Length: 506
Image 1 (cartoon, rainbow, N blue to C red):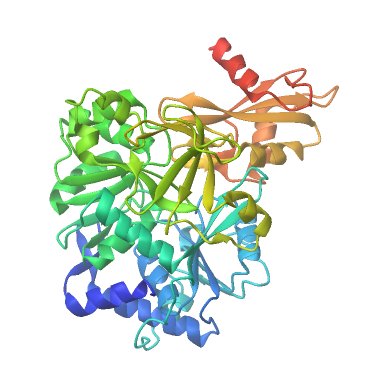
Image 2 (image 1 turned 30 degrees about the horizontal axis):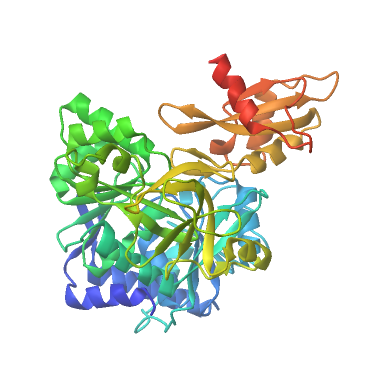
């Protein structure tokens, strides 16, 4: 079914319920929200956007985001939300790969974009064009969709340095929603979901549960994550839910201590997207109480691999509570999780292996990338590329990322992509990128550079070079210049040795 049907139903059942808020100010009820989405859909249809067409959304968090998403779905099209921090060249590649026919862009980041020829319709929020689009007579109802029809095309970088489009179907979304209600948290009409993390990612995926219940959707006036703002806003709203990366939780807890707050008004903080250290979550519960729920997932199985519910996060009575709290929980009720060796054979409890996942939330494949899909989906399982162990009770603990992904502030940064950007500089002969622990962001990017003989590009030069090619948040925060990179007998760079280099230096 089309997820826009959930919005249409809530608009009929609770038309006057507050739907969209900016801070504490209601700017749309459910009837308004559904009407806006249906009008945007009609405008898209009038401009030739047909069911199945891909429509990009390159926006910072703002009130127009949700009406635009649901407008795309009302029209039967596929939303392609793109990280608003990406470089215009990266956005253009994604749009071209998705063959996106239209692009919605927030006016604060609209300058300097150069979409590919396939993207014939570019609509900036706040423009006359957007106002005209939203002024159409609303469609009478959402376009029909089957369970296998794509709804969301999520681009996640791979080790090749080129993003892969994860095709998320209507059936995947339904599975994610039902799994949330079963294994993560309940949602009630009086609740409010606060979009402090990017709506292009996990926070946006959690909109569905709140639309179904006719709950409130709140955009902080800052447009992003501000710990002080959240702690001030939450008591005024009450029953707040939010999705947060571990680094955001550390900042929230630190601000709560400064204010002498216990997080009043916040009911649930769902965290994931990066490593949560045991000491940090113990401290968070000590300061703010039993408000925290952990999830583990990937774009390929969105937010739906394992979960650690609030009672287990807060439990200090079980003899294994520390080990369980250091885990990412147990498999969702409708998913199977398997720890396997390289041949796909299950390993014994407590033994490390690759985490494999099976169930209705797993993607059908990558967008027009059958080779990558065949590698990730083998034998009926999703091979996550993550290394972990499972104990006898089914609790999964992550050990490492086999793809060497760097997770900074909850955002994945792939070393190969940064390396390829640096290698286009004429004075860089070789480069290897690794993650270094950072107290606030989880990890930061460090580049080990071999210069062309007789040259020495400085950090400022390499920074400027990166900023012309990749997003600012991906650029290295430190450069280490070496005469050679450590390699094995096959010529492969030994990144473990590089990590030891700065560990010893520290």
